[in-house]
Structure formats: C-alpha cells, structure tokens
Length: 424
Image (cartoon, rainbow, N blue to C red; front, side):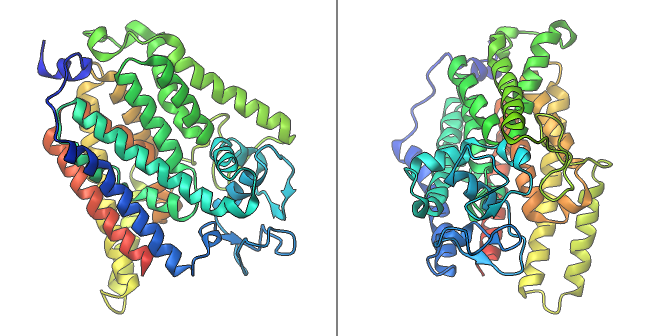
C-alpha cells in the first residue's frame, strides 16, 4: 500500500500529536475571530444590530424591532433579510417585522441559518442580533476543529488548521451576519465524516449545508453524477478513493435541495427570477452568479485596483492600503486557483477524482464570475468560500505538504490584512 493510499484509507492510527498543538489549532482562530468581533463591537458602540447592516430602503424604522439600527439613505446588506427570517423563519410574507424582502424565494432557500439563530435566541427578538454573531463564531470554531482533525489524521501538524480556518471571506460573513460560515462548517463536516466512511452523518451534514447555502449542492451533485456515470470516469482503486460510497450519500442532499426549493416556491407563491440585486442568475436549486469569460473579472479587478492605488493621494491612506491588499489578495487567489487546477487535472481520472472534480467545478465557476463581483472584495471572497475549502482539501488529500503549509500561511496573512482594513 502506498503512503497516499494509507492517508485516504485512514486505517492506522496516526502518530500521537501533543495535546497542546491540538488545543492551539482551534483556540488560536477562535481567539482571533473573537478579537475581531470585539473590535467591531467597540467600533459600533456595543450595538450588535449594526452588524446586520439594515438600510431604510428595505426596513421601515417605524415598524422594525426597537433594538435594530437602521442606516439612513442606504439599501443595506443581505444580513437584514437573514435577520428578518431569524425573527420568523417560516413567515413567507413579502413584508414582516417592518422589513421588506427583496426576493423572498431566493432568500428563503437559505433557511437553516436563520432557523438555528431563532432556536438559539428562544424566539426573543432582542437576543437575535447577538445570537447571529454567536452562531457564526461557533461555526468558524467548528471549521478550525475539523481542519485540525483532518490534518492530524493525515499526519500533518494540526497547528496548520489555525491558518487554514482564517479564510478572509468569513470575515465578511461574521461582520455582516451572513450564511457562509455556517454553510462552510456543514460542508467541511460532511467531507470529514465522508473520509471516516460515516456516510449517514456525512449525508446529513451535506443536506444541512445545502439548506444553509444552495451552492453547496454542487459537491454532492457531482458525486451523484460520478456514481451514476460509473465507468465513464475510470478509477483505479475504488476502495482507496471512497468511490464505494452508497448512492444515497449524494442523492439525499441533491433531492433535499430540490424539495426545499419547490416547497419555498409553493409557500411564498413566487419563483425567483433574479437574485438580490437583480444581477444574479437564479438557476433552479442553485443560485450561482451570471458567468463571463474565464479570468476576465479577475483581470478587470486587478487593473482597477492598480489604477486606484496609483491615484491614491498617499499609499498609507485607507484607500491606498485597501487597493494594495486587494491586489495581493487577487494575486494569491489566482495562484491558489492555478495550483488547485493543476492538482485537479492530474487527479481527475485517478484516485482523487472524488475531490478533484468538485474542486475544479467550484474553481471554474469562480474564475468565470462577472466583473462586478470581482470588483467587490466582499462579493468575490464570499463566492470563493467553497472553492477555497475544496481546494485546501484536495491539497491535503494529495499529500502536497509544502503547498498546504503555504496556503495556511498566506491565508492567515491575508486574513490579518483584511481584518486591519475593516477595523480602521
């Protein structure tokens, strides 16, 4: 048996890792995220409702809960709709609690995160803003723990999980009460239990990921297609790759996405034609952005950032630092996408095809996003969450030790840079 097959089968107990490293692997990111949230809370004067970023275009100040801060002359951000759903998860009326939904069908696909918040707050509306933050912090802690377990089981230093879990896109999710952190925790949990061959648990977690963010359906969807295609995607050793998984593992999350979408359409009495801003293409069951020519959006964003940096009055002004960090982030993501594509292409017909194909699919969708997405770091960092998780897992499974260490280091550095920009 080769060393790589040993990693995938996980039949032997890995070398014991010092308990201190195990604890630090998830304590460091938890403390980092907590400090970031504390910094934002201080900046907002201790008002957790400001994380929601509710705007008066969709929120009627006279009818919204008294503890919700509503910004003047502003459309707000997606968190205001998840806040409304957290107050009444199964209220599909266009207007409720003084908040008008921009697209009730599109938003209601992501009902699990608001439902968790509703349960955590015990139905008390004043507790909802704080609970939205607490649920997201718990999710990033789970992500760090899962990365630590995966690294340890493949005989990597668990401490690398501290860097891998500090993905900058989750900064946007935590600072604006969005769904990415919770969806990422469910998705990574599904992958972790898949590696342990605990398929029922894996299927349940993937189903939860789909109910939290519909784009998560792509992973089980591809696994479903691979299982059906069978001989069309030759695999040398099904047992070592996990290709012997039961069909229901992939089928249940995909069917769950379909049933949920149909139920939401029936309950809301409407079908989503456009996304949040009228710019997203809503394919049934999968709310992906409209696509463009590969890498054109990244190139346009990079050009705009370089131009803005040259036009900035001072390099160390907030605008100058923002442009410089965005350039570094775009370059790092381009390298990450390129490296992920290289590993995926080498393994697309081999022992890692179950990980290579989904990683390649998420990567392709992201490099084809429209210019307006890549011109907004908060948009492209959020959109690339699944691509980052699958790319990191692929590097881990392929035993690319140096690459994984580099990803961990660069991710943590980028996280720190964006954290500083968001706090100043």
